[in-house]
Amino acid sequence: MAPHTKRRIAILTGGGDAPGLNAAIRAVVRHAVFTLGWEVLGVRNGYNGFLRPDGVFPLTLDMVRGILPLGGTILGAANRGNPFAQEVVVNGKKVVRDVSDDLVARIRELNLDAVIVTGGDGTLGAALDLYRKGAPIIGIPKTIDNDVPGTDFTIGFDTAVSVAAEALDRLHTTAESHHRVMVVELMGRDAGFIALHAGIAGGADIILLPEIPFHYEVLAAKVLGRKRRGRMFSIVAVAEGATPVGGHKVYRQPGEGLSIARLGGISLHVADYLAEATDTETRALILGHLQRGGTPTARDRLLATRFGAEAVRMAEQGLVGHMVALHGTRVEPIPLEEALAQRPKRVRPDDDMVQAARAIGTIFGDEIERLQSGQPL
Image (cartoon, rainbow, N blue to C red; front, side):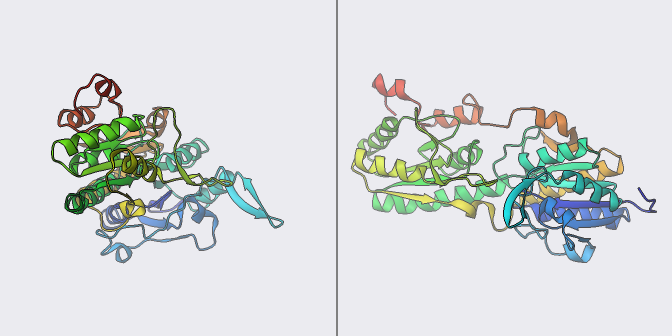
């Protein structure tokens, strides 16, 4: 590595966008440039930027001025940016190649003391493998799903929950006015944290999660029970990855090549069933990417700022191969290998939030024994 008088770091945002990414970028640049006098390079569109002619550029203080409240990422993101499985065109055909050695060589060529990688479990998994090949990686966890192991919360989760909870609030009024069942489909392929948190905050009567398979007849019994008690409407929050007992996830688009099959539509199945089983007008709404767009909440801006500043401190201390994590109220480093060796975070059926929801009358569709014994739902 060629000598240089001041440290040089780079930052990239991989995977899907999440509210708060710009706040993290801003914190990295302000800490590194303004406070320490370092040079910061921005990498466009995830790892791909390292291998593009214009993919790496200087990030200045002027460039991050005013981006704190902005959603998305000024660096761009890439869902298919895994350098160990890169889709390229050779002789007119798409092939999958491992370009990780080229990427590590480029990092060395740029004389980087650290590469701050902001991403979810897929992006951070690739970051760990790059670190094992000699790249000076530091990770920042972000995903609206909050499923990255090793940290209590990730950048983007709070905003997604806030958007989803507000949607549930708004649907209460129209559901009650028209005596309808409103089924709201929220993001959550394998982890139901958004549906759980937003469902509780938004007063959902039924919450359906990927971690807790449900019985359709239990859902109908809940809606009918509410009607008997004079509550002529119901609100259902369902994660896109929720499944009935013995059933399968619902996809709206199959996977192709490196692309992952896209979930979507379980809310339509639930709505159709409830409309027929309860003779109640039912509507389904798929909230989709509204959950990951727009202005980040104050909590996400704060978390992203703390994560960005801590990542630079870790670079200053030479703590590469680590990830920033929130543990309780403390932001601190954790080895990437240790974090990612854990199972992906999932909602535990015995989680205190699940128990709190059950205690106030919310059901998760698994209460078949209560239904069969004649207990009210």
